[in-house]
Amino acid sequence: MNISPLISARRVVALTGAGISKESGIPTFRDSDGLWKKYRPEELASPEAFRKNPQMVWEWYAWRIQLVRNAHPSRGHIVLAEMERHYPEFHVITQNVDGLHQRAGSRNVVELHGRIDRARCTGCGRVYEPAPIEDIPPVCSECNALLRPDVVWFGEPLPPDAWEMAVELASQADAMLVIGTSALVYPAAHLPVLAKSRGAFLVEINPSYTPISSLADITLRTGAGEGLDLIWKEVKEHVEG
Ligand code: OAD
Image (cartoon, rainbow, N blue to C red):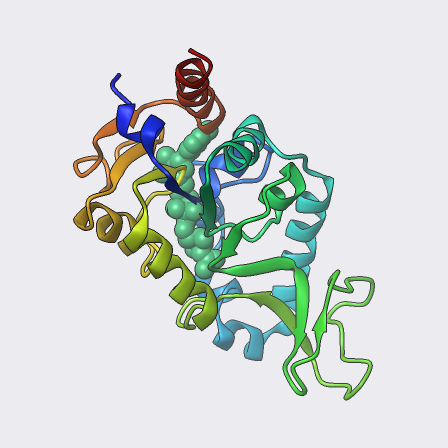
């Protein structure tokens, strides 16, 4: 495995998806045991679903919020936090909404799909962190309107600042690690393509084939923790001589 471009890189970006948090016990979406195999996204993760049945949507989110609150960062999350301290510029761009990168110690994190443990008022826009889930569905203490999970649902645009930052980081990256994402959901899936087109060295870590696999300079068919450990060890050996 020749990872010299990653060893000499100054600007490194990691794009992460549900696979890295699977190793923290949080289900992915599209694996055989993933959430979208059991639940229909249009009934739980869309503005229409929320208008139709806020109680049901909140019950599902409250269950996932509890899962996340009880989870711990995985080895993969921890390695990425260590890498941030090593490289001059290192950012995580994540599609995950669980906050586990920050809990592992990463500071430069761009969240493309929001945060599950945060709620937002559908009336006045007030943000609640942590999301109150004692009474379901929760309402705003200021204006009494319904609160919603502060995540991106199907059919909704990404937070513009996060997306702008992600595009800038991907365009300028010397190397990008693509970890645990099926790379099927746009616009996030465009980022590795953009990075590669601007000359970045692309490393994919995923036990399964994805649309990024044919683009990647190196693909590790392992879980996130194992693959990141391997790469990180090589980078450190080089630095330490
Ligand atoms: P997916 O569920 O689509 O894909 C998970 C990926 O993780 C798959 O490619 C698996 O092969 C891989 N995987 C499984 N186990 C792994 C492991 N131990 N280590 C590393 N990888 C592993 O999840 P995402 O690509 O994150 O959107 O999904 C993207 C978006 O679709 C999510 O952010 C969510 C969902 O609908 C919103 O909620 C807006």
